[in-house]
Image (cartoon, rainbow, N blue to C red; front, side):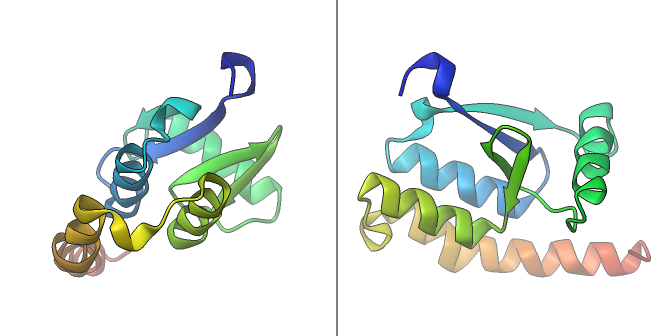
Length: 121
């Protein structure tokens, strides 16, 4: 891929799902094919992306990938499957990704959900 055809990936800084995608792309050796925009919850980038998704009738979610101009795709596992297939990557052979996905990620998501419930979200 050349610089003009690089895919834009939007990652919320504190999101465990975003980290999961970033770990996959990095360990799979694919990160150099993407341009990453990392943002904070509630900042202007976050607000703009949420508005874009809502205007398109899409449930806002992150990570988000601009799979074609103006079209954002979400769903961490779907994105990982898509890029693994495109890159011929066997996810089961990625030790860091699997370590995170099967351990830290599980606990992090539990804590993330507990925090959201505590905040009333």
